[in-house]
Amino acid sequence: MNAQARNQKPSIISGAIWSVLDNTVSQVITFIIFIILAKLLTPSIYGMLSVSLLVTQFFRNVIFDSIATSIVRMKSPTPVDYNSAFFLCFSLSVPAFLIVFLFAPAIEAYMKVPELANVIRGTGIIIVLSGLSRTHEAWLTHNMMFRPLAIRSICSISIGGVVGVVLACKGYAVTSLVVQQVITSLISLVVLWVTTPWKPKMKISKDSIRESVGFSKHVALSNITNFANQNSDVFFITYFLGTAGAGVYSAGKRIVNTLNTVLSSALMRVSLPAFTRYKNDLNEFGKKYLQATYFTVLVTAPAFVGLSALSHDITFLLLGQKWMPSVPIMQIVSAVGFVTSIGYYNHSVMFARDKPEWQARLTLLYAISNVLAFYIFVRYGLIATALVFSIRTILLYPVSAWCALTLLNLTFRQYIREIIVPIICAGGMCMILIGMQEFTLLNESWAGIAVKISFGAISYFILIFTITSTSRKTMILSLAGKIFKRG
Image (cartoon, rainbow, N blue to C red; front, top):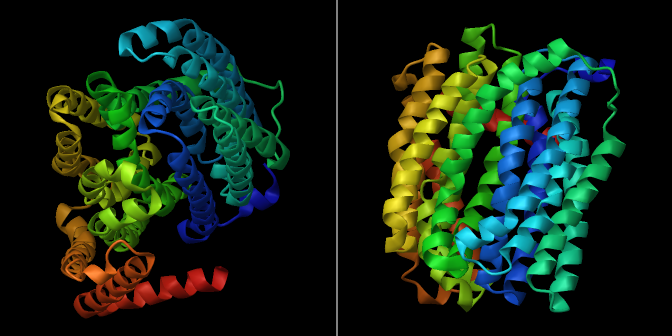
């Protein structure tokens, strides 16, 4: 680790600027590519890709992310720790790919989706590429060097997207999506290896591997259950309703997930290494946690609630008439999207306080409830599935918050005090936007959406500055000034 990275003062705000830029630009590019491909391809093809990516995401989340988390949560990992993590990731990626390659026909037969095996085998290459790059991501994340990560995302997504669009225009259908994903991962690998100061060496340690595996096994269990929690809806939809239903449902969640990544995942990526610096100072840790939660819900609550209110117009203008069945899904899921955004911090607290077993138990609860709920209700249609997803999110969130608050010696009263005002103001903004839907001249047009977004944003901040305390107003203005100055 170089001296500059080691001496860099950790800050959620400064680290988040590059991280938000990374997520914003990459997600905008990804979404533009999605819009283009959605007009060229059918929901059924997108559903097939969604299922195949579940397989690669499973291994990435369970193996590579678990090992990376064990490194990022350390206060001062050594080069040997990173070398050992790289050795683990790569040595496990090859057998993981072989398992996917061999069992792809069985998955196709079980899901009853023709040609799914070839798609799974094609996307399976991403597993090996991820094994070669995940430790580099962990190094940059721990040192809060998000500029190389931003370069990686922009380059890989742009090149992969262009290749995918060209192939789709030439009629390669699902092959275009597979090649797009593989090219994106390959370019990502190359850029990370070129831009990361740390390079893997053969200097590894059995003690480091043992310590990493010991921590990772708890994170892996958490990631397995979290994977089931996040993706069981797509799995059961494909099984009961087919790939077309999965494509429509995934499109409904796509915009929500894009917004969540831009506004929330960047802060999650910054929060773990930043929170780790305060792990032994609970008073300061608690202040940082509540502050981060407040500013996140301040931004995400109006964004997600506003998306719910404008889902019809956005879907019609961006994706076209054939994707309109995804509108109800988007409305239902986006209404509670901000709950997921602030929940990221609860996970970071548990990892930073060295309680991965708490996270494992929590996500096990999530996974069991999700699998049971989706297995029962998916057969009743896509809207029922979206309702179950959102209701479960709301009912189980207090458990996640309780874990973080307990570890930080905070109370629910303190927590609710931080989030209640933005939520109330977002609800008021939503009612205003719903009322504006009566003006038909503003519906299904870009000018109409611009007017609604502008009016909604103005009304939200008027409500915020009317209801919130003077100290909060000062904090908001101070944060805005810092972001503007550093930007």
